Length: 112
Length: 113
Image 1 (cartoon, one colour):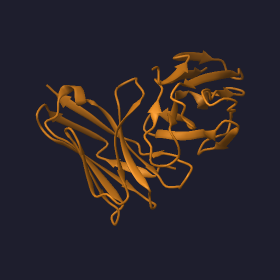
Image 2 (cartoon, rainbow over the protein chains, first blue to last red; image 1 turned 45 degrees about the horizontal axis):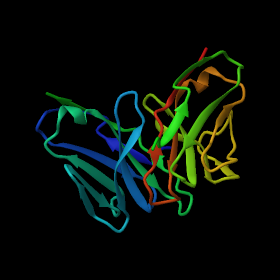
Image 3 (cartoon, helix red, strand yellow; image 1 turned 180 degrees about the vertical axis):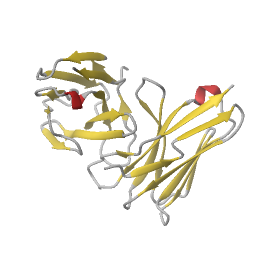
């Protein structure tokens, strides 16, 4: 069963606006990752945040992690039409096996 | 550097047919896995391998077999295709276990009629 649940399921914004997506999960984790999937393509890794980290940045991406609330957020600043994609959070809850458990994703549409 | 290569990209099968989805990676990754992606369901883990000769079941293993004879290859076999196996299949690899990013192939879109 899904470990992570993204919210919202779909998000539509204008170019230049910020986009925030949230992920909640059920069990204790070692790491949480965010991936992007363009339509009809494979998933591409965006960022990994470890359970002892609270915030991480990568270019226009900012990820936060609150292990007490079992939640994470992905912020994309100054969005572009090319950011249109589905975004998934993935957690690995079992040490050593490395199995990633994915949420159902947030579909982001950025209008020019 | 090709990364993770999946073949074929598209396949149509008749119910009861068998086939093998191929996956190869050239990054010398120990960990490889297969997922299926269905509308509204996200990705679900079918089988995974932590190294050559070692495989294990994921969340939805029924109807699928895997083997890992080399580090590079991790084929997924459909034993007797069923319409419920219509899906998009993704192979992924990563350097090791927990804490490493996964690299995904481009996917195989399978339709079972």
